[in-house]
Length: 145
Image (cartoon, rainbow, N blue to C red; front, side):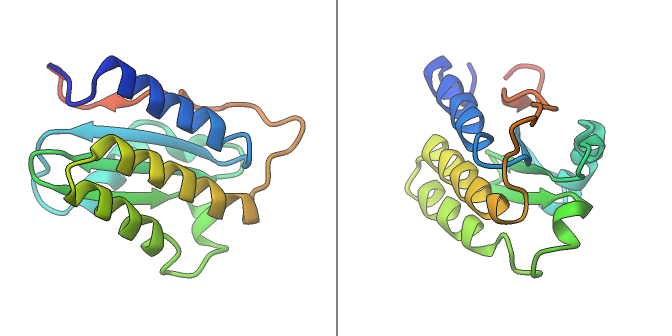
């Protein structure tokens, strides 16, 4: 059984679709049960594996979550990191963590997506010719999810 119901998966995909209407940034969610080591390092590896660094403006964002180990990270591509302060993702992470601590993984991810898009829209507003460069569905990194 998946960590997210079909309805929750649809809600998360729709949150990404809605969020990307405000920004040319590309947001993806990657989920696995266990994270050996540091979540940021693990997420960075998946960032490249998923081709997140291939967006035209280098403005991809990966929200990574290891459900059983209670770890998560947010990775932004170099186009974002070259423009924003080093603590750019801290408020997003804080809001997500509040939901996670109360057992609301889906709500936490949706909050993270919305806040990421809100922040990205400042630096990468959506343009009329914007193309969705990456899929909006959740990437389940464990085969049984």
